[in-house]
Amino acid sequence: MQRRDWTDGHVERWSPVLPDLDPEVEGAVTRMKKLSVHLRRVREQSLLDLDLHRQEFDTLHKLAGRGGTAAPSELAADLDLAPASVTGRLDALERRGFVRRTPSTTDRRRVDVELTDEGRAIWRVAMDSLGHEEERLLGVLDKAERVLLNDMLRRVMVVAEAARDADWD
Image (cartoon, rainbow, N blue to C red; front, side):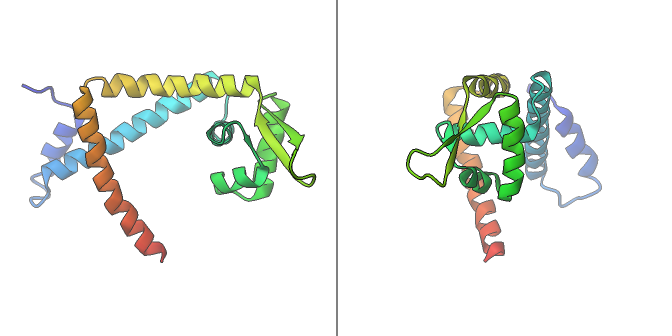
């Protein structure tokens, strides 16, 4: 017999109130929400432990995703922020020694932002913390089950993204 979780009780409580409720849909959606909240809490605790603000981590993360170097305008676009907001973030990260600004080698008007060794190291520690928790949670599934879960979630996301894109047109 499978172990029960909090969501099983939630679905049982709501089924008599909402007779048309599909328990499989409600269970899946509720579990996805609760997993998302759990992973967000793990990330926030990891950042707190590292004395790193979420916006600092987000900026380091986007910079790392660009190979460790980017123009401030590229970071602003990646973070969906106004350039002035990115300037403030970069100022704080530079004071902490996590990034440095250097003149571009290709355009004298441009400044490049690059991760320092310290910035890459703290980003990596934060990523490892979350990654360990993700591995711990999904470790209950074998490789084939993880592939199946990933494929099923992709199919759901394609529908969600199509609806979002239609709303934006």
